[in-house]
Image (cartoon, rainbow, N blue to C red; front, top):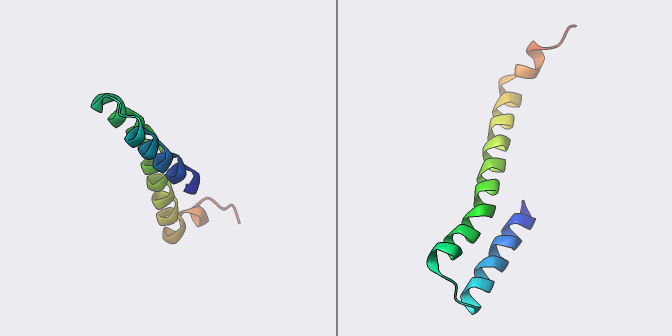
Length: 61
């Protein structure tokens, strides 16, 4: 996840030093953010599953 933030910061820096059209800049900056948000949502869902004890429902003991 930290790598995604580094990539996002690098893209922001690169786009600020060499001006690009606004649409291209928004597209390039949004791609890593989509993956980052997806990873955070999956992590939140998994934490809720663990706290809810859903894993215990699947045990055959």
